[in-house]
Image (tube, rainbow, N blue to C red):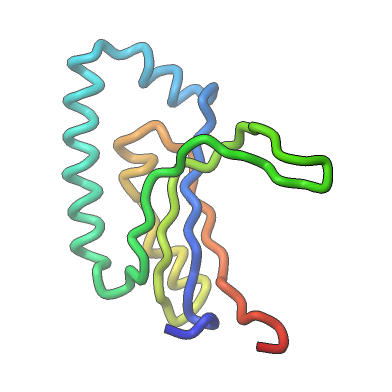
Length: 121
């Protein structure tokens, strides 16, 4: 893998978006059923795109922000990540069309960006 054909996909979903509110309004049994269906769909997506997946990634936990002012807890919409290999930015984005993140789960979107080479490396 070279940096010019690697793409980072960030899965986004806020805790207060309408899809998450609807998800949280479901009964525990309904959420579990939808979760199982979603995981099956996600596994199918992985199998279909296995040759493009460089790093499966995974769910993201709580965030710490480090700045010149120190370390603080922050909240953002990032839920998970995956790294894929594709011939173009458009091709990488197309891998995530109709992804279970938002077709089965209450995720809002997926942002895909190229992993650029380190300048001067």
